[in-house]
Image (cartoon, rainbow, N blue to C red):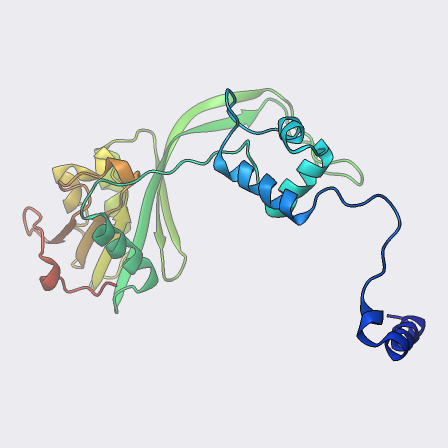
Length: 269
């Protein structure tokens, strides 16, 4: 604020006291979108679409409210209203959904002491593409260029495990995406893990992970393994072994068993 403005308002206050601080009538046409009109506009927008239409438009709302479409658009942007957008949500019918979510989130936020938490996932059908001509390098004012056509060298499947604590990624590519390749990846994963300690593996509900033989893939290490299958879709969770905790000793312990919650040696939220 400039010194002239300060002197002006001080003089108005000295002469007219508090009345001098009120805003004087401004030139131009009076305001059409009063506070009551804005409240009515926002209320009508939130109540739902008009009859025989799927959504409000600026022109249809302008005809009803008696304002211009530019005013409607400005008010909608001010209040963050987008009548043309609709998001989706899904509720889970699993009564144990909250407990399962707490188990998975607990491993990420509060991992057990002296244990390794791995988040595992796969990416299948990865196309191995190559361009028909060598790439042209970037030059001043010209970006790097490549040909529009390409050559396919088949597809591959990527298996990867992320160490939540260190951020280290252990990956391996296979030609196919079956439980045999999944077991091979678990064997390679076991070769890079410490010989002792607890290992928690978090993975999704893919059918390859839920095979009976997949639980014994970490036979090469003496670590105690806890496998947690996280739900991919909230509505597709079933009450069977799709998200229960499987705990087994990887050295010839036989079939996996389910541990009760109060007997689990790991710490969760």
